[in-house]
Image (tube, rainbow, N blue to C red):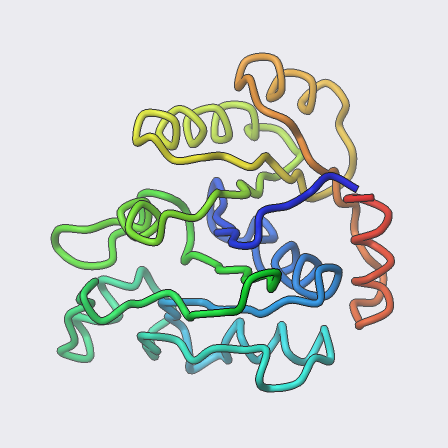
Amino acid sequence: MAKLPERLFVTGTDTAVGKTLVAAMLVAGLDGHYWKPVQSGCDEGTDTTWVQEKTGLSTDRFFKEAYRLKGFMSPHAAAARENVTIDFSTIHMPALKAGSHLVMEGAGGLMVPLNDRWLVIDLIKRLAAPVILVARTTLGTINHTLLSLEKLKAEGIDVAGVVMNGPKDEGNRKAIEHFGKVRVLAEVEPIAEINPGSLKEAFRMYFG
């Protein structure tokens, strides 16, 4: 198995590309902890609740969001609707003992605004954790993934690798690795039933 850093920030090329699934797989496979610093769309449930349910891990493996916002929209817009300002000085990475894994998950893609000044990529820089970039496998992914990788590298952010989510597409994978000069860590195909066992098995299959 490729050795993964103890701290990982899972971000995506877009919304709904499978970030939360990949985060859950990592948490289950690494027997780790999960933290989503900023959550919007709480009226429709939270990613923390979903990951806990699907991994079956105890509540002490999950850290409370710094911001929980009701509206299913960009965090800066959801915060404005609630008369809240997302302040980076209130967001602190949870402290864990050496050897423990912490999987952090962002909101949407890199350029999603958190307030009138900062974007998700600025939060990643502040937390200083290597990134796993989740991308679709389907048409359009090459452009979206290469643009995201270019921005991460321009900002000096360490990229642990890319995870492609969806039906395998060898051509897209090869193009991303070649032009992005990055390793595709896994190509995660659809999982019929998501539960603790299937997540651990998927981790062994794709990251082993």
